[in-house]
Image (cartoon, rainbow, N blue to C red; front, side):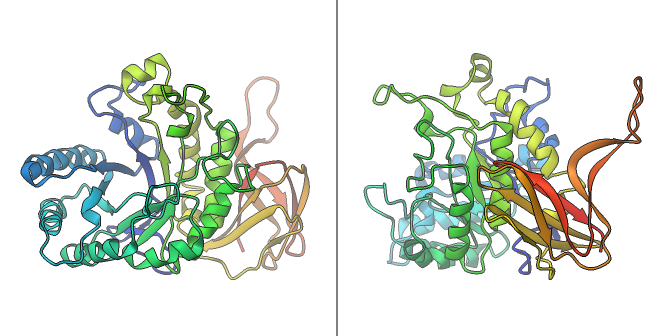
Length: 410
């Protein structure tokens, strides 16, 4: 882990993980004709959630071999795995238990594989909607054992979005990275999180809460493709599926980043019960990938934006004059980045101040213009839109759920 930023270190390089949970099945081609892992790797994905909830001592050898085969496929495409340990990540108090012995066997069988990236601990242990919370003590014991067995791969514990900071803080010794899943796009809006804020901006609220609960440890936020609360069942036939648009998903991703997320997980592509017939046959929501996720990841992993996602905080105290605009300023190499999101309903010009002296203009990343203006036939050179800076200040239009990434050269 890169302590100054919270970014994950992979082979010595800072990485902003983009995780699919769960990934597409490897045996069926994507609509593009590519094999699924080749498709998502080319599209900007870097991690896949793998593993299982049902590790069993009787079948452990076969289960480990199966997981290694998944790691092989991932590594062949430059991907790494977020391996779920199921109940093995919650150890009883007595040393030498059967569960501890199985944990040792699984970790020793997988830890040396180049396809392993991080371990996944108990899922949502503090969920208040669960019949009983899973106490932190067993998770802490498992974390200590894991780190003794494998000091090179961190442990990630994802919480439900509803726990308070006071409830979540005792789990801090049980992980190296934490976060929460938050799925606000639904009928009615915001029912996954509950509470007063039913807007998309609840993603920022939950991420900020997890940052407080984590202390100095990194946070990854899990965002929505689909989730169980939007899938009709025999017990709940009235549920109506609702998916985020590209504008929704982009805002949620950048709002999580502004609030402190150092990685993003996208959950639910495997939920074929709410997929198109073609996607259900393919085993994954490729329509969502084509229309929403791939365009977003193309931006997040671009050579323009990616450095901002792993950059440390900047010394510059950049501020916005609108109360509903949140921002973060970061510095990497020769560039100062300002990432800003608007959580309110207003549409107007926002004034930004606090840039270092001497800056005359900045680029608005991934907002394109032609320079010079294109003639009736043909076109000019494509460049990023610019904003003029004077006296360390600039103005720009922002509307509801807009997100901007500005780049300046001090």
